[in-house]
Image (tube, rainbow, N blue to C red):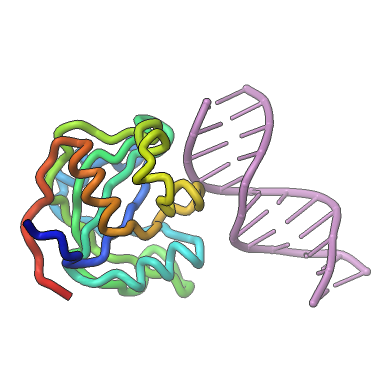
Length: 149
DNA sequence: GCCAACGTTGGC
DNA sequence: GCCAACGTTGGC
């Protein structure tokens, strides 16, 4: 049993018809650009290489659909002249069963998730116990054990 | 520094 | 398509 948090976890949102999890799998790596909200940017900057990402489809699907990871820590957003940041994101594994927003709301262990409290923020932190609950609900093994912090 | 107007996000 | 939440902008 490995119950100890190994890394931080974050949830990132994307509208699947703009850039879905399948696009990330196809690309193998992508710069998570276009974030134009200070709090979301600060979350990007707090990410460490190897942190776990929950990939969430907003609007359409409204579900966590896959695991991903931070492949490169924050650097300046090449799509902006201003002080915005990106990280590079790589896919790990799709969820066997997506975990929908409805399920998240209906699950007491997930009632405190940042994504519910800050529903419009596109990059939010996720507590490790919440990650484990989502992995369990999705029938998906957490991808590769990572280094302890 | 306040606050109203406005724009964006995202659920429904 | 509507609307609530909420961050940002700009006038004062």
